[in-house]
Image (cartoon, rainbow, N blue to C red; front, side, top):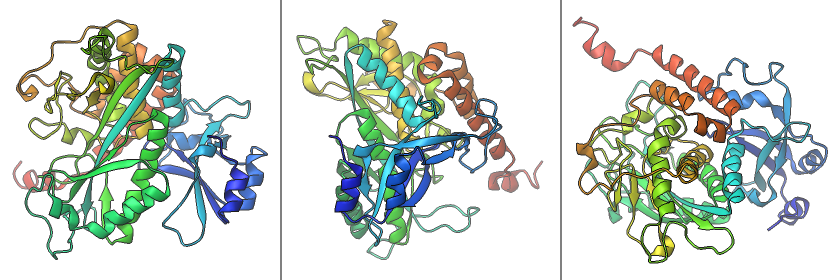
Length: 447
């Protein structure tokens, strides 16, 4: 449905508009304008930002502009009308709108994460396919931590005490923070973010929100906005919400499981099931693509040095690219379902991943499996934790694999891969300069 932005803004008496794009890290970047100036700017290519913001590291540093314009020239933002929403936590009527970035000759900015996902979805459309996704996003609530040298701690709930025991699927444990979650649901409803189930995960004050299935771009937009919503709501309640993959030493990590399926664009038939309701050849080839290429896509699914702390044996996270039926120890779980709902759950992606890039990577791997007619291995019956680790163990290994995977690089865009690689190498070098508490504890007086 096309939205008339001018009419929408006037009807709601909006005074300011937040114009946002996602950078590589999934951080909202952009400009805030008075409503009148916003409407004037979008008609004159006036919403401009430097292309170099797509080369920002998570620490806020710019990379050397080798693959970006060396003049740090502007690109312009074109709002996506159907993405406009009221920001519900502001007192002043304020709108937020997601934008696409373009060069002044009208071509899209190929290093923008939203465009990377669009590239992949266009390939699906060219073959008459429609992808559907449904993410499950985990996060922790933690006490306000003003000094990053101190470990994170669970916050105090309504009982006046922090959680000290595992509370997987605990109803009363969720209710400890009921006022916060009521606000999250209210804010999501106000923004038309289609979230579904809330559950308590295994970690102390670790929660999971499931999204209803839908178009990957729409769901990626919603996930992008949801992460911002949760962080803002938590701050309003005097706690932090974090989507770090592994925020606490003795707690499990946080994932972004991505359920995905592919249907015929004309008939709507789920291509993952054959005429008899069994797994189709298309489905097995799709899994074959995930198995072959997912390790190379890890910089998009596990983008930070911290991400790889989550991917440990017996830690509710996969360590390899095996698949199985209703098996939570594998990288790719196939839930028990009807043929119409046949899907595969990618359990590798972390909650810290940029949703546009995580979905683009996962769908690209499956696409390559079908196009290259790859063969999936046999499903795992027992625990995949008893089998060898074959996912990258650290970010440098993941970057090496990505840059060796030519078919995947071509789908994502070579220039984007170059920029992503430079960003991640810059972040990794910054991390290597930090001396940890572990080093001071065990090396200072012993070696």
